Length: 216
Image (cartoon, rainbow, N blue to C red; front, top):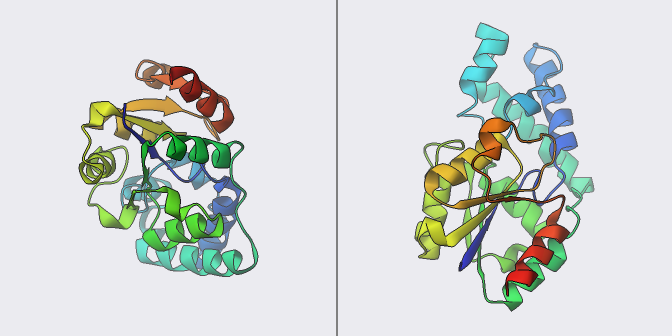
């Protein structure tokens, strides 16, 4: 195995609570009320791919452009004075993998401006050889495109890549691409469907590092 592909939200960064606040803000601005609870219903998806879920919940009151606008408005202001906490074990895992010459990539459903903001803020941007974001592909998770693109740019076959994920949609995306899905749960625990496709499951990123260390 030559490469490790990282999800971002919920895997490297504890962004769940921030998105609850952002969508509460956006929902009130849109006139549909606090919508932070939608984070759990759309885990791993970008706004485009989750459109049908939003329409099912709010009908004609839902406006995708307004959701994008007010979400970005909230997050832009929030990130001016706040940094999102990194997940336990992230720094030691990245350092270990780089020292062992693994190729590293990010495959995120979030837009590029947000991904770059988080990676730069945590001073880990330089660890990654490839960064694929939600606004760089046509079909977001659970479709496999983001992982297939990451593998293509890494110049590795999907079966030679591990995928670190926390959400159902992300794990399905990685599996459908042919990668080996490793789960580190955040807001959601695997159901029977996901348990069947998991390569491994760990409590945190420190455990992930310990696993790779034993393999080398």
